[in-house]
Structures are given as structure tokens and as C-alpha cells.
Length: 298
Ligand SMILES: C[S@@+](CC[C@H](N)C(=O)[O-])C[C@H]1O[C@@H](n2cnc3c(N)ncnc32)[C@H](O)[C@@H]1O
Image: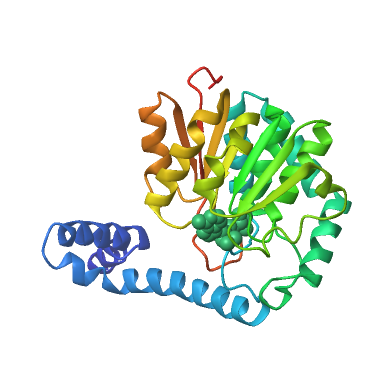
């Protein structure tokens, strides 16, 4: 009887757990640990890959995009984007959230873009419901900074261009110059948004360094041609003399290329990168970098 009660004490679940913990701690310090943890590791990576595979399959069936992917952001990432813009501009985060809501809730803006996507010369390779993702930050930056002249290199269809134009219209001042090597570029910029946009066709380095751009000065430049790091270095060199004292420079390739960060350091500026996290999409995200003056209010 005494023995049985001793056995039942020994086998209580908490004691079993304690023994297993002690055992696994002992194994963790041996070369066996890696093999022992293999089933758990396999299950973790398989769960992750299954999620990516499911999203990839859904995207392959539902989306028509093959480049310049559009996606929404995960909820927490969306709020971090507001904090990011707030820190770069010094605008209270409440105001930035207001700008973002203003853009996302603007029915005319959304309808113009959706109609443009459906009727685009490239409608077969684009989705017909616009998704702003990180591009809404460009809208908020323009609303918070009130630039007179914005330049965008590589507008592609013109989703960012239209968002920037909408922000300029709300500000009641400022113009956007876009430059793209593809004559079809910017096809979504239509309706009222066209009034504040000057579309130029040509090589970005040439146009960023041209008298048309330099005579007006540049308060905000967005580099999104994605040609290569040497090209982005050349774009920065071409536009630098035109930048006004408080100008901000953005790059959509700063997750991959060091150009904007290096240029910021060389020019005594601040640099920050925002990493975006796509919602329900296989794409890992790009984000964008911002170079801004040292005197900015971080
Ligand atoms: C990655 S896409 C831009 C994406 C777009 N800004 C968006 O938000 O969806 C790159 C664009 O740069 C343009 N491009 C490529 N090389 C260029 C160059 N040397 N000069 C000007 N535009 C260029 C392409 O035609 C294309 O429209």
C-alpha cells in the first residue's frame, strides 16, 4: 500500500512535466538536441510554408499583377506607418492618422483609380480594385509637409502620382512632376488630379538634372524607377542641387540598396526605412526609405 501511494505521487502530471523539462534541458546541452527538436522545427516551418503556399495559390487565381504589386498592410504595420510619417514630419500621429483616413475614405479618389485600372491600356495585367498599401504614406507626407513642388521618378500606372495629386489638391497648392521612360506611364492620373500634374517622358537621370526641374526647386522627390543602384545614385546626384532646404527624398528600393542611406550620410541628413508587411499576400514587402534634413523635428 505504501509503495502504491509512492508510485501515484511519482506519476502526478506536474512531476512528469518536471522530469521531462529536466530531461529536455539535459538534452539541450548535448549534440542530440538538434535531432530531438527536429519534429517541432519541421512542424513550425511547414505551418509557415503552408500559409505562404495558400496565399500564393489564392493570388495566382485572383490577381492579374505580374510586377509593381499592390497590397494592403497588416493592421499593426498600417499604424506603424502613421507613426513613421509622424516622426519624419513632426506632425502629431493623430493628424497623420487623419490624413491616412482622409485618403482611404476618399470615394472620388478610389473610384477614379478603379475606373482607370479597369479601362487601362494594361487592364489585363492589373487588378481593378486599387490597394494603396504603403503609398498612402506619400499622401500623408504631402499633407503634413505642404510641398510646392514634388517630383516622382517612375510613376508606372500612376497610383502614387494620383495619391500625391489628391494631397496637393487638398493642400490647395503645389504641383507634381512625374518622369517615366514608358510613354504609357501615369495612365491613371485623370479627372481633377490631372490639373496639378506635369507628366514628362524620358530618362529620370536626365530629367531630374534638367533646367525644367532645377528652376522650380524640389521639396519632395520620390525615386521609384528600380533600375539599379548605380541609376539611383545618379538620380540622387542629378536632383541634389535642386532640393530645397527642408526637402525630403524617398526611395522604394532602400530595403535592397544602400543608395539613399549612404547619400543621406554624405549630405549630413537623417535617414529612416519603413518596412511594410503585406496583408494576405505572398510578397514579403519592400517598404520605402526617407532622407530628411537634420533640423527636422525627430
Ligand atoms: C517599379 S515601377 C514604379 C512603381 C510605381 N511607382 C508604383 O507605385 O506602383 C518602375 C517604373 O520606372 C520606369 N522606369 C524604368 N527605367 C526608367 C528610367 N531610366 N527613367 C525613367 N523611368 C524609368 C518604368 O517604366 C516603370 O514605370
